[in-house]
Length: 200
Image (cartoon, rainbow, N blue to C red; front, side, top):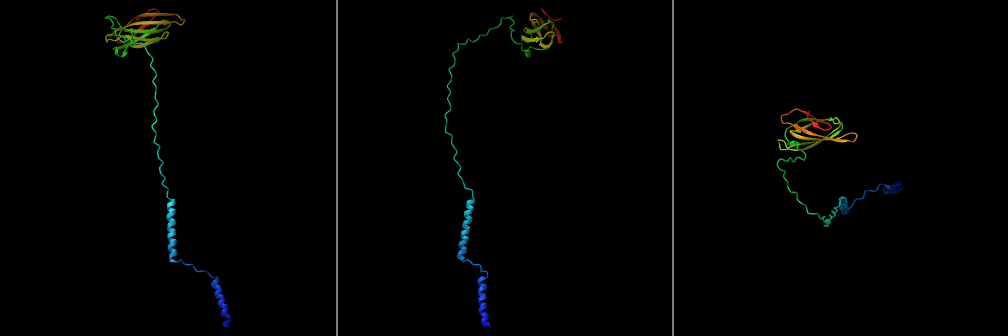
């Protein structure tokens, strides 16, 4: 019976070995070495590709010297020759006070109240004769109808002149002398009337 079963077992064994799982093939040492070298070179190449490339800095443009614009001067107009003013001195005793008064250098001051009783608008001019501080000059003010104006004036004698303009268009003037004495330290009144300026 063994003779009958043996060929059957042999055929079955061949069949099973043919259909069974195959064994893992092993590489030869030379093939392993070639694979490792190839893999190493692939990693080196990929690392080099991942590095940023050094791009050269573009050269900067150097400006070329540009000539500056040239300006042509216009011809100057011809002027007649100038005559230099000559210094003139006032004769002794003449009061040269037709200039603005330098109040800051004209010495001590006191209050003066001007009252417009003319019935019109007044343009007031006060001219100080040379005072004890060597100062003289003129001051000007405007006063409305019936206005009272308080001023702080340097000490000295003033010539007062008022140009009066009435509401109907008529005009007039008034004048007088105002003496702001050194010894007076109180406020005093000056009244502008239709024809005269008085200190009551």
